[in-house]
Amino acid sequence: MLTFVVFTLDLTPSTNLSAMKKLNLFPALFASLTIVIAACGGGGEAENTGPKYNYEKADSLPSGYLEELGVVKTNIESSAALFSHMNEKGYAFNESALLSASKSFSGASKQAMGIGAIGSDLVYSASYGQTQSAMDRLKGLLSTASSLGVVEAFNEELITKMASDDSTVNKSVMLTKAYLNAKDQLFSEERAQYATFMIIGGFVEGLHVSCQSMKDDIKDDQVRIGFFEIVNSIGSVQHLCRVFESNAEMKKLGEDLHGLDPLIKAIKKNAKGYTKEDVAALADAVASIRNSSF
Image (cartoon, rainbow, N blue to C red; front, side):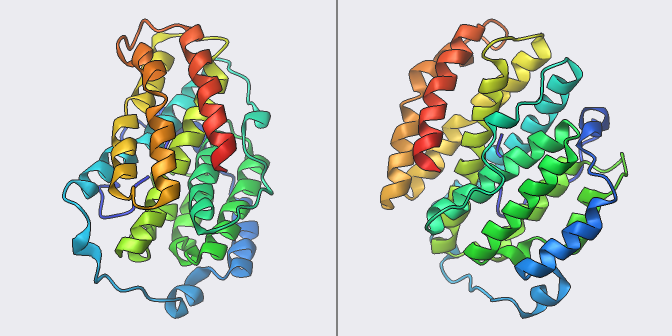
């Protein structure tokens, strides 16, 4: 669930490859992906000629910001593992819980949130082996990234690995690196705001999809713990909002997320004992934030 880190992070693939095995995107996708990247201005040539951003404001970021990003980054891996396990346990793929593959976003902040949200939906689709759904959302992600001016973060090498049938490759790590490789584009203070919007968008969407999947059934403790790990990262997401609370949209998101605290508490106080009714109550509140944010 979000999931999303933008700066220097440890992206070493997890050794728990069995949990990731359903994240494979078929090799046939790569030819289509290459066309999409070229159409959006990505690929090797775009990387060499794309805009360059300075780093003069990087040291003005508050202490602890990068550490919080590192905490939130694990949301992607947690979400991917949870969705993969849900598939194994018989949870149905829920296309209606996802954003429309053709959804557009107005304004830079919402575009940044959209990149994160689409990324979460892509992870969910890939976890269920829904190749066409994942492909459609990758197109949308690249298109939105192009509109925001960060499409060069999505290079062909990473896309190739994501599209391969190599079961030893942790695809969630590849996705993390692909769309959060924005460290080269988003490290000044202004663009760090966009990076934070990406993180929040991915978190909200990952939490929404998880809630929608679990509100009627919690099949085992592994599902419970996976969901708990996603929920438990909300404190770090809230802190990232406070860093940029001078931005009105970011401040509103922070306030909305703090409004979830009473519902989150019921889940955080007992990682193995919360009920589907607790999840259902959270699901309604998260859906409301999602609908107003995207």
